[in-house]
Amino acid sequence: MENNFKSGFITIIGRPNVGKSTFLNRVIGQKIAIMSDKPQTTRNKIQGVLTQSDSQFVFIDTPGIHKPKHRLGDFMVGLAENTLNEVDAILFMINADEGYGKGDQYILDLLQKVKNPVFLIINKIDLIHPDELFPIIDQYKDKCNFEEIIPISALQGNNVNHLLDILKQHLPEGPQYYPADQVTDHPERFIMSELIREKVLQLTREEIPHSIAVVIENIEKRDSNAVFIQATIVTERKTQKGILIGKQGSMLKNIGKDARKDIEALLGTKVYLELWVKIQKDWRNKQSQLQEFGFRSDEY
Image (cartoon, rainbow, N blue to C red; front, top):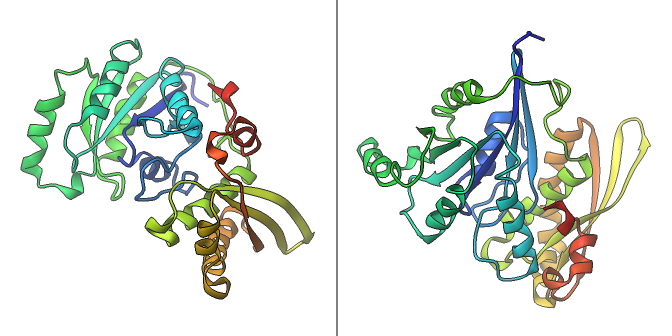
């Protein structure tokens, strides 16, 4: 390790669906945060670790800031807001393809109260004509004392390395917090549940809202070549259970097939995945259920 090793914690904050998880997965080089075109996909702080020869970036992908509609929403927004004073730098990410809105102003008001350097990251520039970028910069540049304004495409990788170079300049000298080969601080069990939840969101589309949770019930290595996993998809209504199972179990089978591929890539071994569906009415408003499913209020 070099004498002038730099390290720090960087939070990624923004409205729902601006590409925070896509950016994190791009930087880390593998999937640790689930991606969906539905808002509020990320529910927990996902820490992704990028280690280079002279530095270590610890990224925190927060839930999109939105107006909460239930206790789970309160938990998500609380997590996002409370990372602002715990980090060395803040990436405020916006979607180049979306107009300025009240949600952006709410975040900007929060950022006025922090002392850490704030970078405006204009994501999804691949969706707009280059001439459209300058009006966006003009619209935002005077709304906060941004350290820098950096346009990127997290999906295609445009300008992402430049952003990392700029960030490195602002990181303090510090220790290597995590081993060089570690990419997240979350246990494999958590990542597995997120990968299953991602497939539910992708395959059921608009039929299933964000009223599901995934609980890994059992992980068992029965031989040297395979891991057996049992997981339960929790939903709030009987009609949603029917959609999740599908005709003759077809939907649940497809969810399991797609999730198994990602879990095998994560574990590097063959996986047998068994899925069940259970109804827990109004679980997003019940503190005991939230804690059981991993959403603990003492985390923020």
